[in-house]
Length: 216
Image (cartoon, rainbow, N blue to C red; front, top):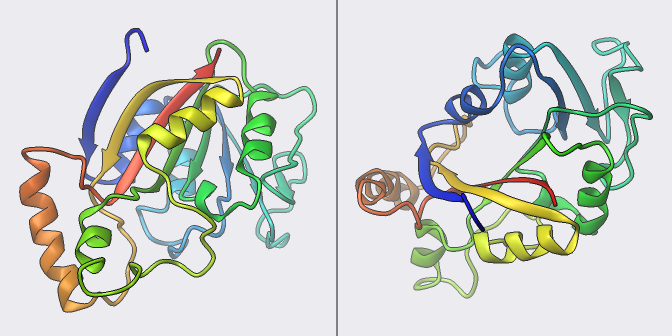
């Protein structure tokens, strides 16, 4: 694609968000509540979006209405069929969401309906060819994967899917750190060190893929 830059590595999603949103933006965070991170964690993407943008909306399958009583800005429902009538977003952020969906094309169509020519859709998803997956294929039939995931993506397949849904890929980037607090195996701890070293040479084995797109 003309003008597409590739292969930037962000240390965290915090750095990614700071690179793409500003105080004038209206932002939709899709799957904002179920992001595998404590809400008091300073790296929680939704909190970062609220801190750095003009107006934030959110949608998730389940929402604590005591915490989010604003039904205009917060919807409980499917990412594949969401609708905020009459609202156009400057940025739609979907962090580690698309790999959970049974019908990702429907989700992208819903996003497109809320975008104009200047809007950006930012997707993050596990990189199918990250170093951990490749290493586990030597010792297991299949790599360890979240049991709720429905598919793997690399930047080529995600770019094709976006194009089929009328969205053009403008940037392909990566995030090094998952930021989540969880118990890691010794293999994963070792690979984290290797990730950091290899990312200085090439980001293609990095854990998380970032694809930014716009309307065609």
